[in-house]
Length: 161
Image (spheres, rainbow, N blue to C red):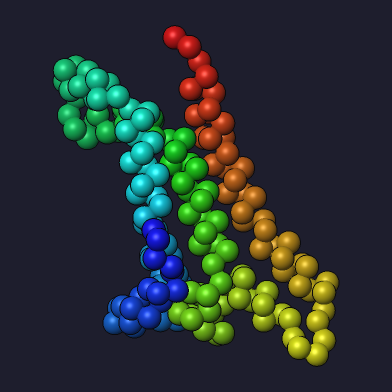
């Protein structure tokens, strides 16, 4: 987590070129799916929020490992997974350098396209602001969809019993 992202761009580009993904959207999506922050976040949350006694009780009740994961661990991890989903989406959505390098100008992401709307001589600010507004909408939609899970997790932790 302490290594800057810019140091991994050249090896990652070489890897994407070997896979034949340069110029394709998969080269932007796949490297951002699992991050060190996500692994650390979920591990720390589950260690704190999921006592081992709960897993042992499910095993004593006869649950298999998959059923324990599905019915005990996953509901407990839902609020943290929602927060991680928002963080991961925002990090990938707002990324500028990696999509600029791996996709090129022929297949830009929203942020690269907004940058290309600006020129050095004349900038149509109405067009840039329209692009910025349209680029903000998916972030709001993701927050509204996953925000329910976050609030439900907060409310679940507030109930005494």
